Image (cartoon, rainbow, N blue to C red; front, side):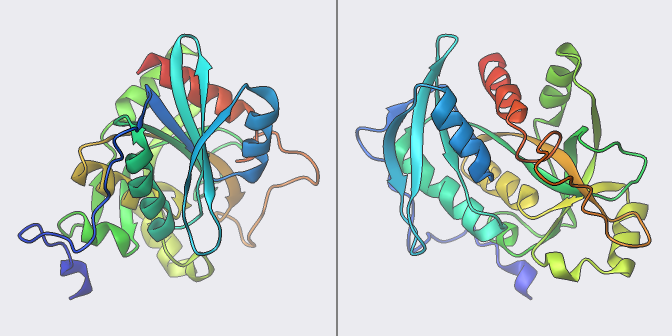
Length: 251
């Protein structure tokens, strides 16, 4: 079966090849937002250190100094296969095992207020990529969830913990599947978390993950919960990069 794709008994035909002149940095921050990328480049003294090559175009990788730390940063693509591929390629350029990822997610619980930070504790593996990096299971544990939650508490940031549903098909988030995941304790749905945790486990990397509650599925009709030209509380809210920066300093 397709979920039995994990092979740890033979070598991969292609592997990341770390460069001799890799940038030694304390952590790497990854976003999915082009708006946050623009914000970082306009508000911080960033130096471009390389590119991640894709047929659709390169992704630029930057470094910046913050509170005595060297932090790498790049904007990745949406979806498990490309987000994982980009992270694998990033290890060729960057000498660090600390990766902080943040992005938007649909809310499966209407009691969760718009804009509240969500810290995933487990991710339901409704995607294909993770099964190439880990043995089959319904869920994968998000290893550093407690570290992220403790950081949120210490900085008095409103957040909630819970399982997340990682899917490949956002147009196939059907009513029945939504009900199954919600009954199972999932509070959010997104497209990368389970796969990124799987590759980090496989490559001995540390992943720190948080999400922003965006659109609402727990309603009679899907609600984008987005006001025109208002980025506050969305995945494009620049304050989430500031949170990621402080988290990078603390780990």
